[in-house]
Figure 1 (tube, rainbow, N blue to C red):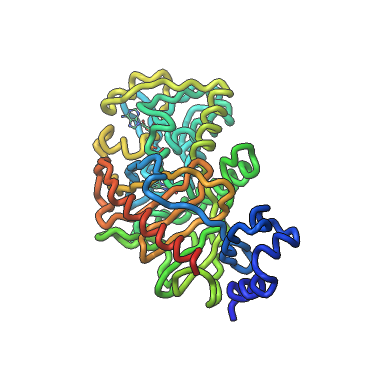
Figure 2 (cartoon, rainbow, N blue to C red):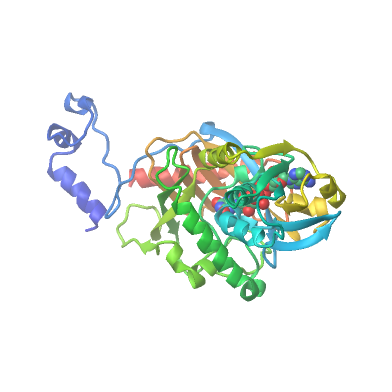
Length: 399
Ligand SMILES: Cc1cc2nc3c(=O)[nH]c(=O)nc-3n(C[C@H](O)[C@H](O)[C@H](O)COP(=O)(O)OP(=O)(O)OC[C@H]3O[C@@H](n4cnc5c(N)ncnc54)[C@H](O)[C@@H]3O)c2cc1C
């Protein structure tokens, strides 16, 4: 008999939920007064009860598209002379931009030739631009950000918001060359993220993910899109200490899947986190100027001898950089659910739901994402993902 079934039998043996309520174990008063008792929640040993939650199309409050700025060789972090300025590039972070942001900022700032308190211009106000600007301020530079858009309307604002430092960050072919820098970036970023835990608004927190699959989890870091290159498994191979190892649930778990594993995952509540970064930057005297650079010659217009270029996928057009490959991603945000402390991912459903404070985030993998730069919404993709996840949640709570 499983633990989940064991718990149900225990509830039955105690005379059901009404009796538990009578014993003061948290059932609503109505249950004691003859109202229908709620079914017991599914139970995972070592985790506890799985709170029910609602996934439905009419709870979607936003559908967003974002293009991952992928480069086969890894992000471009290098210095060049352009339009009379020293330009330090810091772009091309694939599906790992939030995760690697702080470490990438440190790598880029190491290439800035002028010493603080010199003025420094940053172009871009996404995950990379904001963290580079903040780290530069901390080191004493007088920083101005120039950007076409700022949060909550940059591509970074539409990301899933989880610790994913080796998601489409380079190809396996270029993995060895990039590995030492990746490791420095991942460690520095991880260390910085821990300093945001427990802050008001929970900008960064940990949650629990339950991952379901019909066949054993042999492949790590797989993506659902066709024609994708092989990727290195940096997290597993180089830095397993940066995330707790997943634990396989024994047979008898309540999930509607043959194989389930549970893992702790660092979650970025992007609304409160980017608000915190913006406030911090402006609170330290930073200025944000709305400006669009039409081409490399426009670096000359910026009011600083050194510029850090954090334009993400925008660098493809700005610099004509065709090493940037677009990888489309669409997310749907649903009304947040108070107190939800876990998320679900299903390999067969090709969908995940993350319990972000600023909205349940549903992500699906499209088969044609790799190489796709379309930012047109495809609502039916999100509706399908929500419906498939809703079916799983339904089965979980009926089990
Ligand atoms: C669906 C999806 C989910 C993702 N989930 C995660 C995740 O969970 N964890 C994670 O770590 N990463 C994730 N990513 C990846 C992450 O979102 C990106 O790596 C990251 O957003 C890149 O940040 P950025 O600052 O370089 O680019 P952007 O956010 O695009 O910012 C670029 C900035 O430059 C400005 N700009 C661009 N061109 C110009 C110009 N010509 N002139 C002036 N300004 C300009 C823009 O206005 C903007 O301010 C995800 C991506 C997608 C698509």
